[in-house]
Image 1 (cartoon, rainbow, N blue to C red):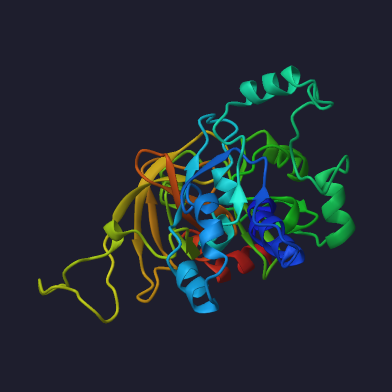
Image 2 (image 1 turned 30 degrees about the horizontal axis):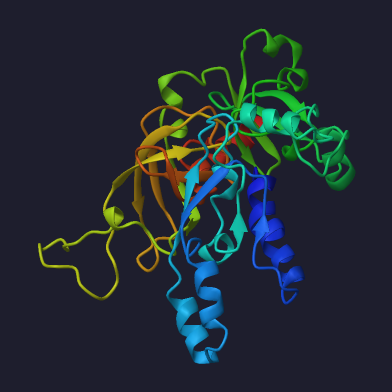
Length: 341
């Protein structure tokens, strides 16, 4: 898989085990420098109600917690610095305890505030990449922890071996830069080549020089998503089918879903693509099929997809691209093996 460490770090570390570590120490909120906005909840009422609630018994406090207004996660006004994508897997419980004090500003405004207050980091360059790597190169980090596991690179159209790789984890779907150095010299001239799929069972990488042609349209627009997490603790109502197939009201029992349109982000950045989502999990809407209006550069299993309202402003949740995505366009396994043999 191609995981997103930033999304996982936020949900499991920064707003996960860190919350557990400070539990019981008297901290009501955690302030973070993320570029995102929160609205709703009980922000406006906390100070006024605090004194009145001190003498309430435990049952009253339990009732209050069950009636907490839900938080809504909004994009920052700066489309380039917006980090709502990285926060899209957070739960209501996590969002209730966090503050984003600079989320309503553009990066240039934050930089100017740092200058006005003469902060020591006022001229510090923007940070990029994985925070835990420091100056270590990404490939060196992977090599140190995962080592090498060589395998063949196969032309996705013909099954011909066109190169050799040192390990699947050094490459990701949609990759173009760097793939040429692991291809045979005569093949490189027929590029550009893109990584289009990986087969971990056989340590195969599939590459193609036809990535922009119609044969890969479905592979770049249609995919299955799993482990969906909705910020509002449940799917939005416009994805729910109000009537069953017979036209009767769909009340009670297992919910049924209908296709709905959403704005989506496949990766961090200003780019947003529209598409449709049809949930397939009958109980809680935790999986579904997605169709994008435009081809994406590289849909890799393990990658997060963040869901937004059609105006692109509110983040509704996220899901993870499933391995099922590869099954629709990989070469037949027997054909691949016979070509290698």
